[in-house]
Length: 276
Image (cartoon, rainbow, N blue to C red):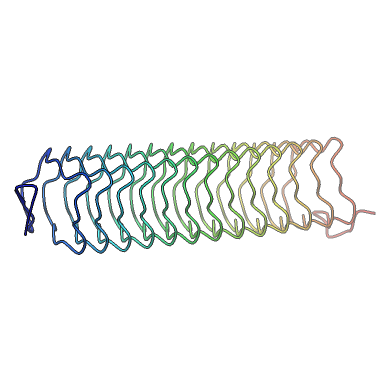
């Protein structure tokens, strides 16, 4: 197939090619070199881009619904406003990628690298991010409702105002992450690592934090109503003005924990007794 004078085929050398607004639906570009290519507004629905080289390619507003990008290199690529719904990006490299306001609903990103990626305002509902690396990623205002982040690495990530309602964060690493004003209602944070994380004003209503490590975390004014904090490490954590109504703190480590003005009404305390 030929488009705009370029041969569209597996392994093609399309470095810096101008394919903006082109119709490449179902095209086979597996292993192709698209480094720096212009793919703005391009239709790549169902296309095969497995292990393709898309370093710093411009995919702004590109349509990639159900495309295969497994193992592709998208380092520094511009995917602002792109449609990546149900796209396969397992083990892909998206380091430094720009995904602001992109649609990643139901996208498969298992084992993918998104270090330093900008996902601000992106839609990631039901997205598969198990074991993915998101070191220093910007996920502020992102919608991660029901997203699977089990075992993912989010060290130093910015999740300010992110919606993580019903998200699976079991065994996830969130050390030093910023979760200020984040919504974690009904989220699963079992055995999660939140050492020195900032959870100021976060909503953790009914969240499962069993066995989580929150040492030194900032939970000032956080809502932990009916949250499960059984066997949680809260050493040196700041829970000033936190709402712990009906929370389960049985077996929790509260050594040097700040609980000034915290509401513990009906909470189960570390020794198993119930606060009046």
